[in-house]
Image 1: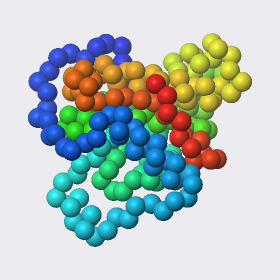
Image 2 (image 1 turned 30 degrees about the vertical axis):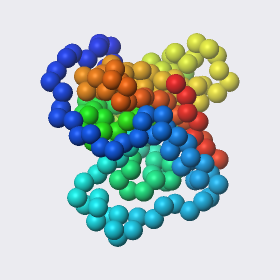
Image 3 (image 1 turned 120 degrees about the horizontal axis):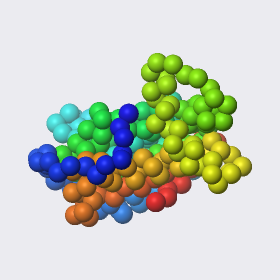
Image 4 (image 1 turned 90 degrees about the vertical axis):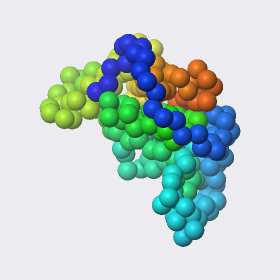
Length: 216
């Protein structure tokens, strides 16, 4: 998994595609409004044949969602967006490896997305496994261990505050750490942030209500 210990070295930026993307705060508001529509059960926008034909020519997403692979957390649904509007990168525990980082950088620099949302969720299985590793010495092997280990530092940090719900606190701490790491992980992302073209926020999805809470 990607380690966020060092600031990204400077490199030649990818050729930028400047889409008609909203400003970062406008993009965030679109997601807030979309989630409200989802919670209230308002109808999702239609993916008409005309819309699909346009998407076949090019994609113009306005936000990148760094989410978990959990089947209950589908970004397009919970933010009430059509196909082509969100650039979604999903790994269990919403962690970021080198390949995922490349996808995120591509979305920010080439596709012109103005917002990155690191989206954690309640009762995350990957985070629960990391808590079991820290609290009870649970042992995982192979690729599952590689998936869980990057989350362990977030669990250790969350544990110091003695929260009543260590899994929930660890989910939120993991989101914060991934979001902070992304702010310095790649030259394309760093440049977009410095120029004010991009914003990175954390978020937490509550499975039982459908509500998304955003935080810095």
